[in-house]
Image (cartoon, rainbow, N blue to C red; front, side, top):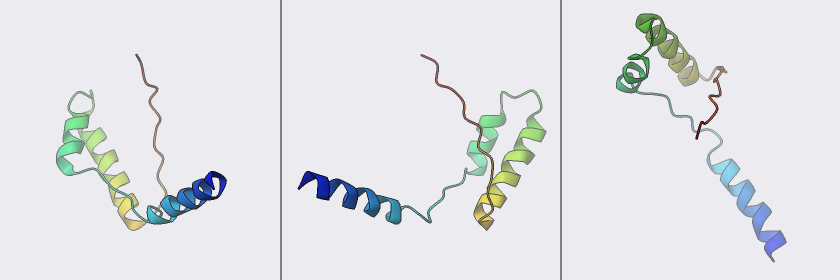
Length: 68
């Protein structure tokens, strides 16, 4: 039963969240770029990525490793 339930649950979650993508708000973008040396460039880049995401285009997302 467990072997049957896990794949069905997995596919249900994949199809449920397939078309939903959340972009950053303007306040969050300013908050992220507040400590960057080139603040205006950072804001422009993130707003451009937000626009591309909302239009359905692919964007690059940098992965920042977690430090303990």
